Length: 239
Length: 336
Image 1 (tube, rainbow over the protein chains, first blue to last red):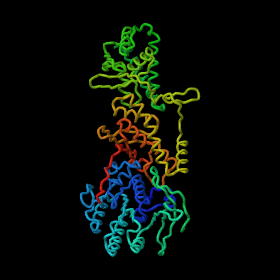
Image 2 (image 1 turned 120 degrees about the horizontal axis):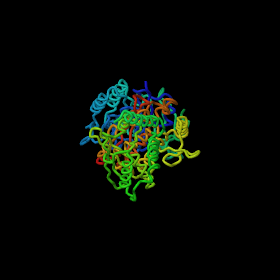
Image 3 (image 1 turned 180 degrees about the vertical axis):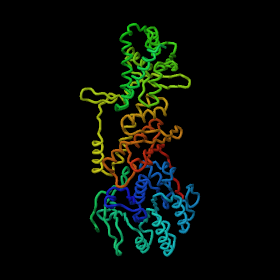
Image 4 (image 1 turned 120 degrees about the vertical axis):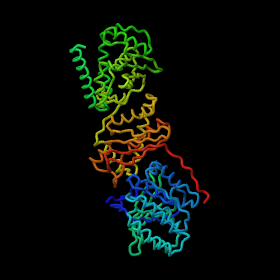
């Protein structure tokens, strides 16, 4: 079975054999740190590998990701025409001109129905799904509902071999929800701005939760307008 | 026609066809050298009878007319089979091909898809070169149904990219210094970029393709008025350079969209022999992608982007490319 990668050199190098389709990645990070850029890299890599990439835009309209990809010289309309790049508008709520849109962000069951409908439409394809950001959908929902929805959804996606990247913005959800949610993912990628003498420097850590501990490798990274995310050094912290 | 005339005619046609078959095996199409051979024949006629050429004009159609009269006078051709018309930068030649002595050669060579040069048009090229000391580029359209060949000779100051010459130890393409790159050298370059700057590899290839494509497309645009014709010419250049065999599937000038399939891309062959440079199977022909984007961008004068949707290195027997003008997205949603 073909393996998948982020599309970020340095990060991929340390993934050994990459992800299997059906894996789930949680990306958790500070606002403005580059989570959407990482999502763009993940999509770009998927498009090159022949995947169908589904992007759920919750925090900004889909046109922002379209323009972002275009800035990296990705011929977005070509992939959309060929159904290789699909946008779900979970931002506009009303008056969306997208083929797939969510009418009410607060109703997780409606979201789940929409997501499964889109995935069913591309059955047989290797699918990458990016939700940017899932935490936005969870903000106005009861904790118990969040956890139930999340378990059911991730089970469905795993069973259907969908490679998932769920994005969470730091500080939006309660730490307890984040901890419990984190256990449901195969990989966790944390993206943060450094503090103290590293103020303003971007860091990322990729790892897994093992015995309540986040075991990871830490990297410094930057965002380049041509190359996207560039890992500059491995910090050797927490390894 | 006597038996011996038929035999001689057949022999001449066989010889020309054989030349074309040989030329096909030369790198960069052999088209230039084929034309040189045709010139050579015409030059022999000029060497023998050129002093009798009655011409004092500098206009291409008048020079060609004088040459026609000379050949008619010497019994080589019947000048009545020809129609000449002057254009801004050259001359249009129409010939009745039903009685053309080179009909057999022409039919068979075109059918086999071999490099082709119209012998009659080459003769005019030769005389124009001799009198005006200028190079004229030929273009020919053969209409078998109506029995007409329409050729055009137009002045071009740019040497063609298929003209490969060796001057002492220097190899030149279109008059500029060039090198031949083996697969080993090419893959060494790529491997080296991948080791030093892996994040840059696909960008470097796309960009390099784009830059070289822009150069060639600008040059070609000076030679062709028709965009589709120009694009076909540019795609042939890719084939001549050994980078693959591109085929134009569709081209809509209005929308700026083109679909191109490329068989046996050089990059695919290199990957098959030396292994893939990327971690997972994916499209790899970024150099061609850049070249196609540049071609369309220059021809349509619109910023263009090209995607490789399927790569022969992953599956199938060709790579699929789609080029489109760069779209403009309006940012909305500030209301939220």
